[in-house]
Image (cartoon, rainbow, N blue to C red; front, top):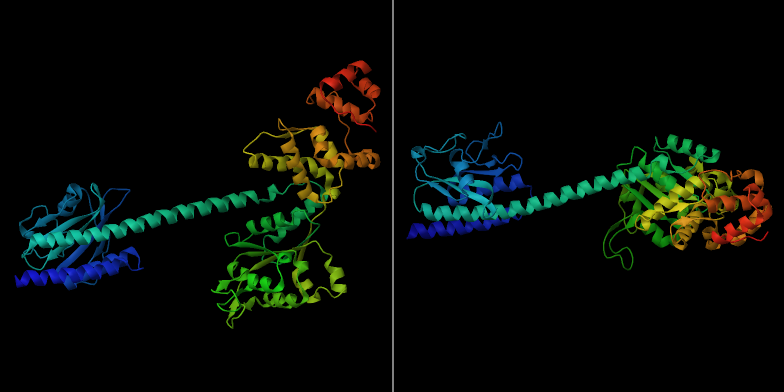
Length: 514
């Protein structure tokens, strides 16, 4: 009776210690090794061994062993279903008790650990009945109470199973997240390839050449140009085609925040640095370490903050707000502005030393009015993106609409063009954007003025007999070439004035008054 009481107390103490081990933050192998050590020291279960099933081969591989020898396993040891006592436990899915190892013919003794005169217990580790994922085995130091000791080992095996299950769920989630992260990175790289920056005009070809050169190095870049010219797109292209593409890419609009918040956003803050700073917070510079930080609207920052920013750009170090520890980072800076920084420097509004520190490699983005020949390709690209946003709806733009777009001055540049095309897509019931749809987006007065002042040689004449044009397009092209004089348009189409009037009515063409 005394021995049974001592055994129960030892087992309870062992269960408590093993539960602590399995709830620790160590990796799985360290946990399993610690479990076998506790079994040996606290409950007299010597030469413990844990095997876990490999999903690929359906075999058991020894994951942890406890013995008097400190030498690790020289090579993996496997047991297949039905092979030896370990394989028999895996095959049967139930505990096997061997009263004397020497008398068990199934015992293989591959490990060379076990006393042939002592018993042996092997218990299945299973997540649920019929799903055995491993075997826990040990050799009691005597033959007393084998039934109780087998049930005790089953309890330990159950604890191990729950721990392994949780770890495998976490591993699957981590693998899924890593896979999703890799897919997103590949999608980002694909989206920001140089080929995805649309333009074949001479100013854009110059921009492409500069981007390709600067992406190779960790140089500070200053992207200049009017609002809506695509400065952020260029910043993305530089990062995702550079050597730090695998690192983070963070963005911050400097014009959107006052100095106090801007400093906290860029440099971070310590707990208690100011009211509301209830936790330590890392800033964008720290988060972008070994990556790229894009500072948009850099010309909007105040003179007082320019000095703080200059130090980071020069030395690569800073302190968090309210902190004293100097933090060093390696961050590639890409800045952007639509301001004339040379004038700002002359007027004393922008620090000259900061200007030269930022203007290492300038990239000047041309306004859309200076590259109107890119409008057709840009329109097709932007419509493809709008089509995706509208659930894959088929969208097409007609030549008559393109001609209108090319007559506009586009003060809002590519952003304005994108908004105009999105309005046109919404207002087109069948997804076909022609002249009438484009005029209905609000360009009518602009187009009327542009047609009076535009230079005809900028636009290519459309062949009214082109087989690729449908009837509506052909009639509109003839009307535009004839200044919307129906008699002249009729002669271009080899029609009578009555015939073209009938076509205009049946094709629902809005006649323009010039």
